[in-house]
Length: 118
Image (cartoon, rainbow, N blue to C red; front, side, top):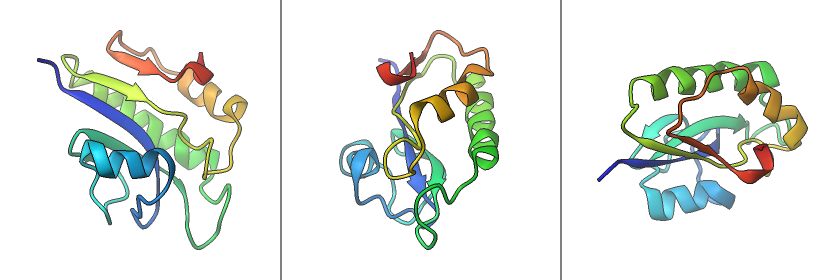
């Protein structure tokens, strides 16, 4: 059976209390207090600084984390990744702002994006 990973938007403090982050914590093994990277069967990308509010993590920084995630997926080609609409909820960005960051990479067939990104 393949490992399935939920990719979600996180905050700088790793408080996974709302949205997809809460689902990641409650059902996919995301660790409260851990803001970034692989956690259980989930992978966090920081999209919000709780002390600063919406759009507090720049698109450039989100882009760097997406690149890190992309590189990570290349080492886990036998895993399946489900990418939620990162940054588009509590992060405050619109789909049309995040989508170009994702389109920069040649994703393998084991990466599945939320329909809003298609």
